[in-house]
Image (cartoon, rainbow, N blue to C red; front, side):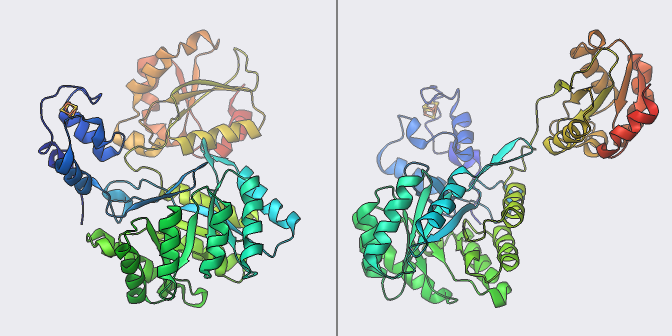
Length: 447
Ligand code: SF4
């Protein structure tokens, strides 16, 4: 399995610590290369074949493919099979499909849905990435007209989908936004590969439920000089475990540094016959390494679980999602209003904040810096103890904000209450374990 550490790379750097790359030392530069925040070409002393060798050495196990000019979508680019081994870099992109048989109203409504989709969850904006245009009519002219209409109405990246090379060519002749070409097969790889070369577009290789055929198509495309290739091993809704096993096999091969199949994987839940099946297959595919999904259903009950799952899987395990520590106000609190406390783990914070807001309470909320950990974990791990809580009370000068000296800590932090009371001089009330109980707690315990 390919895992490169900063030291592996440092050995090949000039080691002069000149700082011309913007980093203080060559070791810092090596660390940032691994984090992908800088490029090897930022060091002016790396040149020629040495630079090329280092680029190859640091390239991800799964090739990163980018499509779309106005809103580029990066797919693949992963270095590990499982997130906890390092992190994932590019979340699964989600495209919504349209087709060239749709009425203008239906087409533009779906395009607007993708373009304007925005859902906020734990402080992050979740969006959709692309529109996949299908050539249902099988008519190149109709397809080109449809692609043109879609391209004129959205900044989102496009995937042009047809098994007819002539339809793909017609689409490419009216769209210069670097769309993803779907798809080259064992019968069309030469023509579709030629289009990918001519228009400089990434291309998808497709073989239905046949990995050796898929590998041959990829190999044939690579032999033409193409590098930006994604793969679709097909989907069989009646046998999803077989589909997912193929995804896993492809990704395992990539991790073993097999350059033939180091391609991002595309899944098409849109091929399912009903929304429930579509959501289930999308969830399985996200869980098993899909880099791009083409989805059909636009009902929120179907899209929301999929983008939520994606967000959960594609957070960086090395950096818990956190919010800034400090004092927040809710409603229009006065000096007599209650002072609640929680941690800066984003999921905890937004749950507590939403419970306070939805109850219409006027209150203060002191957010402890627990390095992004939740209440239970931070109390157990020492990121939240009586001394750190006291420090937060003092640092935020909350004594000047309220006229009382009472703080309500989360029920799960009950064990720090006695010590905090002793060292801070504040009365510490132990609140509910679940923030949904805050209104009832205040009703009974806050005078
Ligand atoms: S520019 Fe090159 S040699 Fe200088 S510190 Fe950066 S990595 Fe090292």
